Image 1 (cartoon, helix red, strand yellow):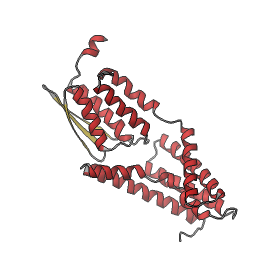
Image 2 (cartoon, rainbow, N blue to C red):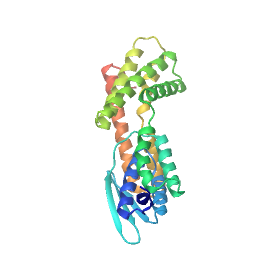
Image 3 (spheres, rainbow, N blue to C red):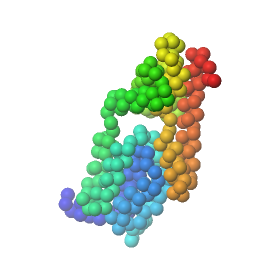
Image 4 (cartoon, rainbow, N blue to C red):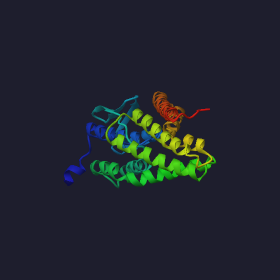
Length: 259
């Protein structure tokens, strides 16, 4: 084992590791500039140069050593956005660069990061529901509206988790969750208990707004990654359209006026 770990990785082995690392980091919601710096940091420790490009559905990585060159093409997977996973993956790149983690040990650390960086689903549901109810209060919603938003977010976000685990298309998931959440808040608002039902309906789908993709697309545009920036912008715009369709459909079913 000591002989294996002391061996310098080849360009092929480095490219395979970096491609998997890039997919995990990019799918977690990082910007292109962070991805570029982390990959170059790891490759530099191996004494190699790396070039990569991000297409709408694939990442191309080319690793060049003194004796060989290797190119890996890996598909981008839809994954839950996780800042903690981004932090752990960035920390791993520094640990490799500082020599605290060997290249071979990083192969074992990488899958553990993906498994351990996720918040428990039920804790996440509760926290997101509280946050969305707080948004309702920021927009002057009363306690009834906050309760309605909490319930609608709880049901909608849990449904989003279930549909995501089942591998259902994310756009269809957003549309369905927006429809269910708006339906719940509209139904509670029709009881005439609260005084701000319109605020409850409007804020019930805020947990689905693709804020991070919009921000990342702007950052990528500033860093010169125009193709990736445009792809992320279109992806976020489509999600926003699905959210709007689901919201309008829920209001239409409950015969609520949009104006």
